[in-house]
Length: 229
Image 1: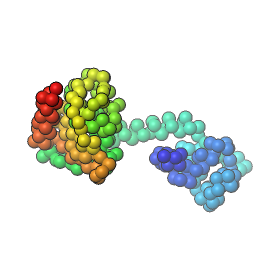
Image 2: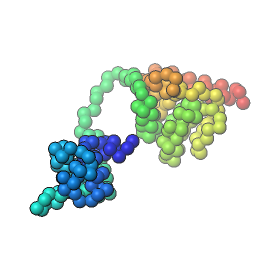
Image 3: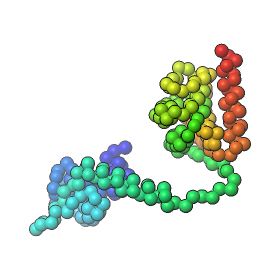
């Protein structure tokens, strides 16, 4: 990710982002000066500067000639964080809750989406978490697992040696990289593939039958580990 892309994620267009960076580097500028330094067409610069002011990225300094100065990055970050938090809190409270009569099976594709779901399941767990992952996949959720242990949750991991995490119960057995099975609170299950050889795809559900099926599979894995000792 570069600066233009990062600023785009908080709502700036590419031209607005370019001009914000230019103002931060050069200080107060007129539209003409900003166009000359940034290399952007003058016709686009004035429109982008107006957008930058409207979005809180710059101040317009009135005078004989209009000049623009950047909002300090510390203020921009603080303002963006505050506004984003307000929007997220509003959405969380106001979005209608979906009525579900039958627990669905949801297919999740793409590594980023699957990893996010893994992290959310672990973060939202209240009592216990069971995982059957190879060490590479466990590293993707290491921070969340450590936080779960710190919250006092029971964390049981089936994986390949020598992976370790303080406070977790670990059973060692060879695990095929890419395969994941995760259960939290006997209420959520995620199972599937996240490896490099195939398209990442997992099944998520709160369906009791699937949870029981994966739970029995994990129990059998643990029994196999005990027999091999």
